[in-house]
Image (cartoon, rainbow, N blue to C red; front, side):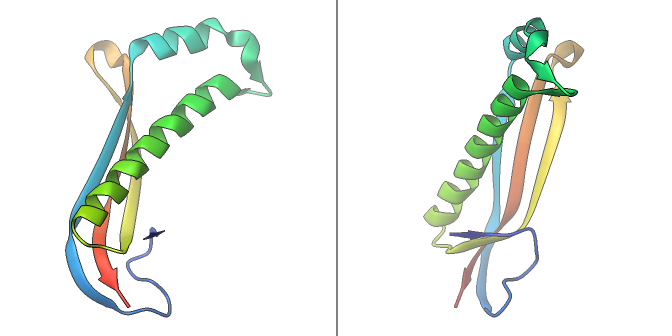
Length: 106
């Protein structure tokens, strides 16, 4: 399935807009305790463990929108927006949110 941040698919015509699809994944407070406890993993200002967990959350959110789009009969998702938010009491969780428009193109 084609997934793009652009409003269209170059070289293809969108036949039908099927609806908005949204996927979310939340990392709980424990992951932050574990990650910040493993400061030795930080190299050059980057935390490999943190980046891996964020990558997993992003993959989950993308899987969700693709499943929703397939259920609507779509073969692409356009206009994808990816957001990261701190949520929960005292900002103890991180949410990855992905949204886009499911479409049928030819």
